[in-house]
Length: 177
Image 1 (cartoon, one colour):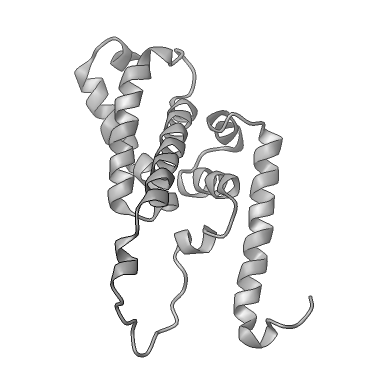
Image 2 (spheres, rainbow, N blue to C red):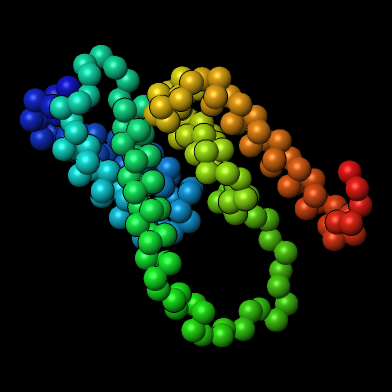
């Protein structure tokens, strides 16, 4: 990163090669659309280039990078919401029948964490998908390590309830727990 700040093009390409996979996983885990993840990845690299002077020598690169990526994701979400409020989704214009015999599948990671609040999804992805430490996630999300631990604990509890409720099936839906 320090070489990139000094204008080394080889260092810039190395950063792109090393970090694009992690960034793409960060975006894909929350967006579900590879096209949207690619758009946000390009936006992150533009912003990283513009903000490279703000990186402090000797500090870890990943929390700094994920803080920028998080802002890109938030901005993308807000922009998408404004568009969705004004436009009619093309899916609602066509009635495409579903499969005749739906096969019960296991949910994808994205489907599994979709019901969680945004802050819990974010820490899960940063911790489990991207492999950041609690302290790195805290720096990337501008929060404390205790707050990150609390969010991930609540996310685990919510997932446990969702998974045990799904395992019981419709027969256990009306029972009190």
